[in-house]
Length: 214
Length: 314
Image (cartoon, rainbow over all chains, first blue to last red; front, top):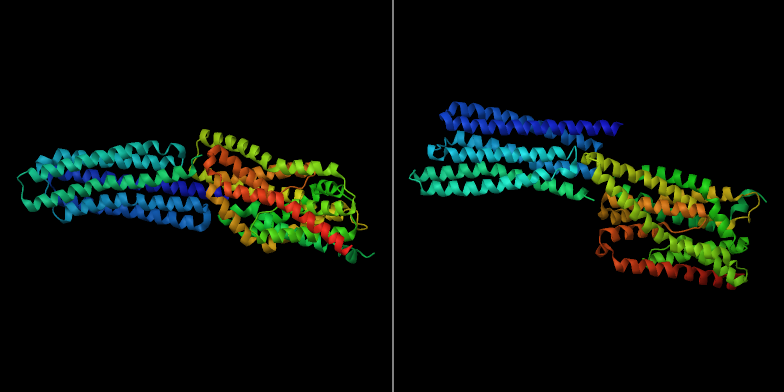
């Protein structure tokens, strides 16, 4: 009975953690969309603070889960797997936060000719993270189906890579200033890394499922 | 005769029971302890209680079978237990897994051949059960594998629930295995003394033997448990549960029949069964050859030792 309660508590905290990651990604998307729309740096800075708060809350929940797991409430194998998953998942909101801070602190200017592609890249990152969260949720309801959503993660990550390459090519064939080209390229890479991190976390889910497959 | 001096010849049997407990308890709780599902202390308590209970409630059938093989005196009973213990020690030195049951039966046969007083009807049953142990375990593990595979593939569940079912199952299977170990193997410890000590019934002998096995598990099994557990673990929790449960069911069936068999052979049979379903390449043929060698050598060696000891000392 005690174990059932502990398990429910861990599962509910993990659901809360996923919710916070989702909030971070929403702020990430809205921040970039708003910035592209009106180039309002003050708003971007405000969003930077918001995403930092959401990311910190996610970190707090992650630490709570870690403490909960070290109180020997879970079997060692499950404990190690969940810790590993959280460690990789945590890098996704971290990357989203770092991207917003980069655009804000380095005063990145995104020329209008790249707006539609950047919006598309951000949208891919959001969908990729959503698929990752869906897959990780499945681990705690029907773990054998957790890898289904991972196909979507891989597909979107690959799409993000192609788009990133296309944008970078376009940046270096455009007539914008050389220094701005470098800054813009780094920004595009930074955004696209959100998908890479989601994919890495997805690989961890694959291992968790494979270990338990019969 | 006062009871304590009368029990002195039991020393060899108790020593054998202690050795058996120290070695074979690893087959039932090794995985759970090595993977820290339960502590060694908790495993000892569960194992000790289940072994004594199994010995007391169902150990008498095996004692009846062993005592039917030949007529024993106190001296021959001591030779039987000491020869079996020496065989076990020698084979362990060669790192060949052995069956205490085979060592004891081999020693009894050695005495029977030396005295010309053998009853082979009981022996046929025992040898058939020895062949039946790995085979039965293979069949049971295949059935369990397919049933549990269907269950885990069909019923949607959290990975934590799945782990809980498997590890909880492993704990229950281990306790059941300890019960089966006591019920089946206690006869190796004190069975040969059946009818030789005044005022001590077969059931009391079984209880005393059970205590000896439990003492072996509690005092000296930690290293073997960790070694065996570490060896079985790479099979994963799912296969470890099937292996321990198949072995427990097989050994319990033979306890009811009254034939002392080997838990090690039971667990190896179960692992072979899993290997067959997962692909033959998973089976380590070198290990199988080593086990087969021990399977043949153990009864022969203990038979020779017991017959020689009888010729020299009696």
